[in-house]
Image: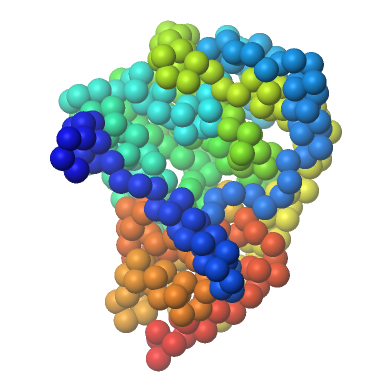
Length: 395
């Protein structure tokens, strides 16, 4: 830590995924032929209906401070939307807090629930910001390694064994970076474990609609009310609705927690972009937008099949997680002469012009993350280069 900076930042590290995306853009701007498969951002435009709603909000003068917890239209739309995704279960619009992207929603939830002395379990591999956010609360993040035979997911047995005195659990499903999806039974077992031990659960479901099974991915909202008393659900429009730049995240929390999060936000950002909230409300409330989502998910599925098929055909000995959701492909590289993920990615972008994210960013440098949220021709070209490089390493 640099001299003079607050000890609050002693564990803070820059986001590796953002850094790699910026490096790829720098190389592209310099005229290099670099294919960026590092960014976790859909390459599709925002659907017309929410885009037009944002424009209309500007013209209607919706350019003032919003309420701390978010506009009623968006909270009602989100409640209706999540209710429909979970079989019509009641969802209270007053229990939502709208923030500047789901990352702030996660921060607000963690900062409101955890503090010095608390221990927060994070199934690993995990998104780069989870442990950073927990550190900022002065709590202690503990990465719980997932089982390679189980899609790198974590079982209740492992949670209980490693963390007999956990305060919180931060879970992502569908998972970034692996693409794994927890089943209904697995989520129920985790929820029961958490309830028995008074553990707060923050469940990041930002990728819920990008699911390659039937319907949306299983959710904590599919569980009985008695298992949700200490659960905060994180949601948003960034991924499934191609609205990353609109910066709208949602947290659904028990009433007291939602009130605390809104109060915290009143002293940080006040509230999320007023205009973008109207766009997000249109995205969640207009059933015609679901047709756009279905088309995007179908395209992600097609790209997923291209990536998985190519690895199985050209690199049959390489271990990977079969992605059932999100738009990531997580594969293991240490079989190539013991190379680390960091070294693999450094050489790949330097020698072959393909940007991927090393597993070190997610807690395990034996692996590498590939994002297939980009155009199919670029994916195909990148796969050619990755296969050539991997075979060169294997020789």
